[in-house]
Figure 1 (cartoon, one colour):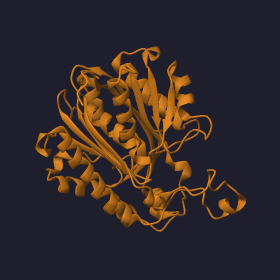
Figure 2: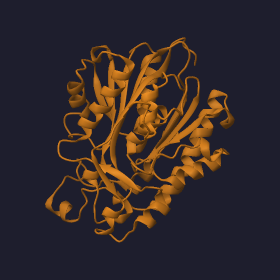
Figure 3: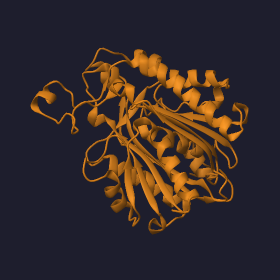
Figure 4: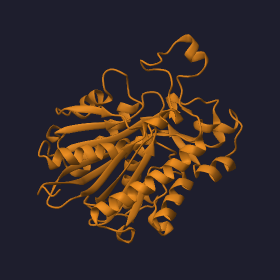
Length: 349
């Protein structure tokens, strides 16, 4: 429905932990190899949080970067949404700690849709701005999955990494967030879960002994197939809702779970390979942080210009999924930022 008031992304930011963990790290603790991991996932390394780094600290660093780039005072933000399934604490929300670190004064809350969290958060922010309930909404996807990984389980421990990505949304004269869809199939919730640690199964000595306080994936192949099918269907639905086609897109940025999933998604949509961004090689699967981290990287590398159409899609535990079609509206990065993102130096630097 056209309301005359729309939401757009005005700025982005991201933050990664200092510690780099190459595939070789896992060769000494589980039966795997660098070749096996690269061939099946596309991941070569990831970042793990170290002392003093947490979901809140990474969120704040990414959020601060997004606010700085937009030239926006923290006190002018009307709403903060922290999308995460690895919160700082069970109580209170991670958003409470991030609000304090950033110097915000607005309402704030956590949103848990696992790997689909940022897409869910973007949709909520879009609705708030369209309704006139907020003018500036900061949406952050952040995870420290390394602290819930079972390092004896090779089906999960090699896949995930830590990080945060932030997006600042503001009103625009035309839609920046053009169309979205969200979905969830709770009948498949047991496929990917952290069994113990909540009220359904508190952490006990028996639970710890059975390692049920760590992330578990019971059927990786089923998750793979559902991810490809669900994200492709979501993308098609959003394009149809917006009256657009895949040919109109500059980039598809899917949840960075697995390079093969992203390649299969591109084939389902009939897209050339260069239109599907694969940004998993050096960060791994960062769950709710993966799309905003990839967006920030694409922007800093000069891959996105104002007016470009970007289609995002995510799929994760729950099983939750969703997609959003975005008209890119963030200002172009300066030359120094682009060169730094490419690992180059400007003249005289």
